[in-house]
Length: 568
Image 1: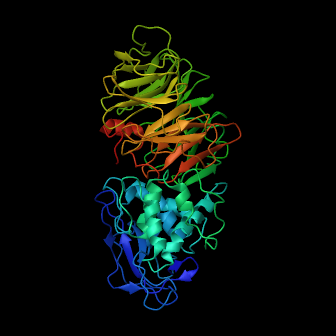
Image 2: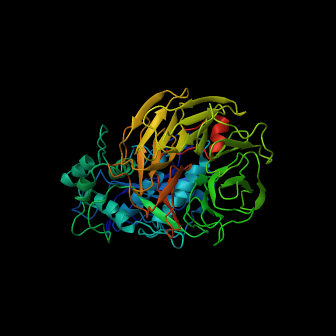
Image 3: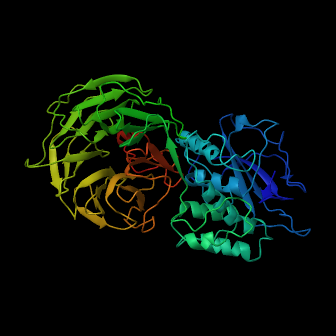
């Protein structure tokens, strides 16, 4: 069924597509062997008209053109709507498909990192990120029911909070154009209001929604003004939002004032908790860990968390001066002490599996077997007072640690612990989050300076940035296109900067999704941004759906393959 709002669309051309596997945003493959159009009620049937490339091939369906209930002969060429269906092998002759503005908004948001303009014909990933694409398709089922055309989705986990009113509003923004003849003002206004700064005008409703999803900080009021008083999807937002990001809050799995966050190779999300546990969630937010989280190894206020190239999960215990190792299924393996572990907070794992921990005045290193690396702990240049907090490892295996004292300097060691240099470039102060991009530049979040600094790999200052809502920045991550995502702890917001330090988020940062005491951030292989909420009693994590570019996960594998800050 194809509907514009509550009205069937007749004469729409239907095409089933297989997502591409030769590059991001490249052409999808049309699967229907005959021309299929919707009838007077908007119904269609594609049974027997396609062959699945494989059972696991991700497919989606697109309706273009047609008459949304206007005078005979009308063909709205600006009409383009879609529904993400998932694995082709799941389709049967009894599968019911509903295509409308809501399935379009939900599908575009979840799949935006894999799409480019083309009215739904350009959607794909690289040959090495089938997992990220599959997870993105699965996320659609949290947002909308593609069998019925309304939300929430049938796979939304219990206890999750979905921004249903915002999704309805996004659908209602498309509705006036969808339900027009395509040549009057409704569509031209939509295309003008959704046009990103420096971009091109969309020519169809899928591309207009893609512009909104990929540029959520632009034209909020103008777009909100497109919603009519008789909008078909209800309830809607009462006022224009701060931004058009779509955020889902998840609970359960032992979450308790969560701290650090990491993503494994399957896209599962791992979090450390105040209640001396670890939590694990699927890529779609379903709790995998039990209600009390994963425990064992004498976890005592675990802080930093990382995943090694073999999939083992490591956490530092700040209260017991220990390093805990868990299997990929959450089974406690061992706890290690010594090596100079002293109130460790941050953790970083190299491509060979060596685990590094940030201590008050040194860094420690352990082999993947738990053996202390020779010479650990490693002191900074010239000694002096330090308080190392977070660790990042570059593609050459060098170790960078941020210093959360007022001096805010950054120390660099070789993979064997040899001191390379100490850098104090720019107005760094109380430096926390640290991450490396594809150019081996080092990005540092300066908490009390309310800024982010960028250093090249030799420690030279590239820039200092204070835009995009930066306010007590804390956690920091780099996505697959080099954009930098920063957590603003006291402001309960998220800042996005491009690789030149320009703001992509509004002056308030991105808000929503129950952000509360935001602490750390990670990007997954589907381009979702995951945020831990540290406020006591919040017991949640937030997913910003499809807002970033996919990355290689876990980070240790990106280090191993020298693919930090690039798409998989």
